[in-house]
Length: 267
Image (cartoon, rainbow, N blue to C red; front, side, top):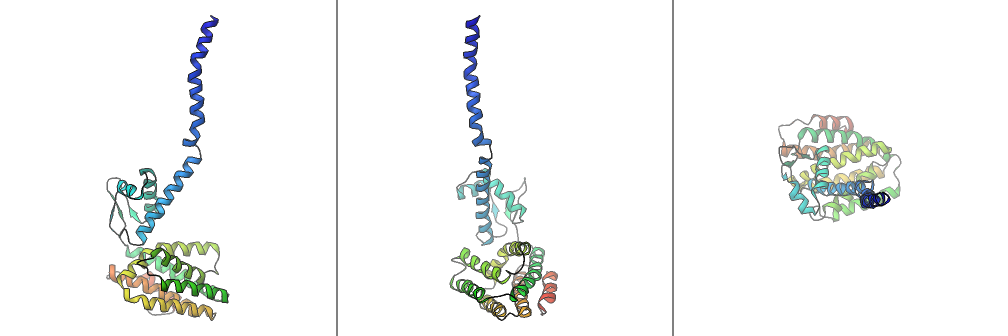
């Protein structure tokens, strides 16, 4: 009887020990650390795909296959699925269960709304910034503008857009964190439109740089009204240029109205 209980205990130990080993080894797969690492990878993949869409490497309408993109980026299908989901939430791709995903085509209504909002918010921001602009701010903006002129957007798109983002960030720095986040989000959303404007009208580069220089000068002179006019016309020109190429029949009511209100100018 005693031997039977002993043998029974011995026979149970491997199962119990195995259960303990499995319980101890479970956290790396199922605990908090694993989702964090997986989430980080998905965000990295999302960032890389997002950049490819915004810089035109994946143009509007191009098909996206998860398996193909996973091989191209050297990752598994799991982070790729999450990256696709995030891109769809941002409106950068259309992905349906029964169809292959595609880079979303340019929507004239979306472009008009984004630039209408940018004009209103950025004219407010530059007007406030002009009142407290310093010599150090002038130097920082001048440096960003020099980098934009030196870099070729086709050869160094990431560096050019970083310098461009820095230039506009300094110009709108006087507003609070919430407005800064809104302006930054709209600016990121409009990157693909900036790229389309650059491709569609390369001759407009000179005018764009002249507008940047005019904005810097208005801020340096602490002239809120002129700074607002310059940035409103600068943003509206980009929107209207792209719309003229992709949807000449579309009436950009938001952009034109915002330009009239904030820039006191004629389109």
